[in-house]
Image (cartoon, rainbow, N blue to C red; front, side):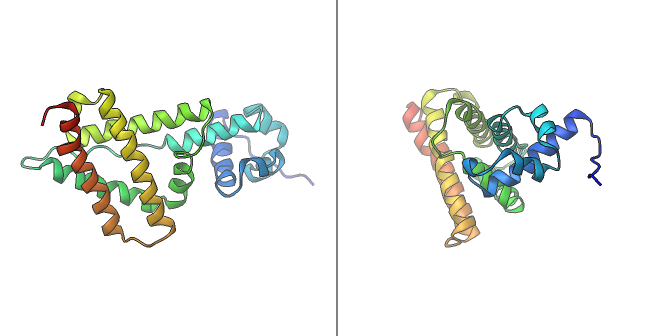
Length: 203
């Protein structure tokens, strides 16, 4: 007797497929995964999988977009007397808290940030990095210069640095959480207080 699949609304079914496929792609290389395996992991037939995602690549891109498009942390609220340094440290702690809670998801998502990218993946990654850069500008009080090319370049560099040392904290375990937060916040403070003003000639 065949397995009865529960009929879900299209959007819910699509989200279910993307979430299940994300688990598969997080543990297996793209070329090593077949559409049959993905369909089994998603609990759907190959035909239904093909209805939502005509190709494995289309599903893969949807998985990456879901991982990198997760809701962002809001910048810390302005509190009377709080300094930029206070806000950056508070934002860093909240960000590390979020990553610690969703360790496997973040590791899977961050794996795309420093890899060789084709144009479609590059578009998704660029949108993610731009969003994170905007959040840093909001936290560090860099609203007025957020669109300057030098500022964007500096923040993209910081994103790569933050990704590298955070992945090391999660995988190698040779730095403590306290050390991680110090590295992240101190570098961001230096960017906001010294490096960016110097580059822009506003120090």
